[in-house]
Image (tube, rainbow, N blue to C red):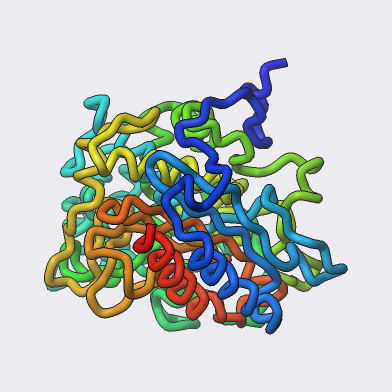
Length: 425
């Protein structure tokens, strides 16, 4: 049976390498001693039990070093070692690896344009708009101007997050600030039963939730906007997001361990995430809203390995350098990493986060041309075209609790040390 036809499982078909696997750091252009010093940063965090473990993949547009694994995949219910092929819940890396890539693919094919209005595909956005004003105008009228570009750049005016998985009434109340400040994540340690409303219920809750600002007036990193983008892509393509990702991204890039909703037999390879009242979240997406959508969503749901994400990062790097890759075009990648939010605070491209002058998770040594993304579970990708460098860092820092914020310090320290190793190539 053709494994590429299997839903709910990782792609296991034959793949084509777009980047060579370097047998030594020097072959890939890294100073061996300095790279060992970079890996020692991760080892220090593991030894202090600040994170359970991690897998890192570093490389260039031509070479990738074998992923390096450190520590444990889990502490509970028993400690299990992490391996180079450990599969992680990538959380918001889904936004750039899958959703942004699929959307840009539609632009390339002349199916959509960045300036198209979202309501063209999702009329519920207008039909379910609250009867209130935003900036002195009826919210329905404001929503008519929301474009695909607004969603990609996090400038549409949506809240950062809302418990849409609790259904339209509860979700709307919370994003409106009835129970919690608008745009906040569910607080650490707070348990609430998910009603699992399904994709239609999540969409209804989202469309009923009030905007927090007018479009183009502020950058508010929003999972809600990317849930809408995923819905838009599915409606335009007439196919679910996981199937599209497999066809357009995973298979062409040889990402054979990447999927949504991993099959049960893959559980031993998957790093668990958070401890909940009914046990560990393991093998299902950590994000509650994505889980309520059946595990396939534009904001989260991707499971992958450092090696697979390294292949994706190498492709993105090649494109940014004007070289061909099996997905997208150099023109699309150039457009994706422009700054569309000048003067609005955080620099944002299309889906991608751009390196900020005032501090970034990619540290101090990545160039101003760098772009990347992070995930709530402790994952990240950063790409520096000026240094011909990418870094993938996967941790499950939410295991066993999301109260752990050690990854916020680990990321810049590790990226500084990797960039230093590349600088001495």
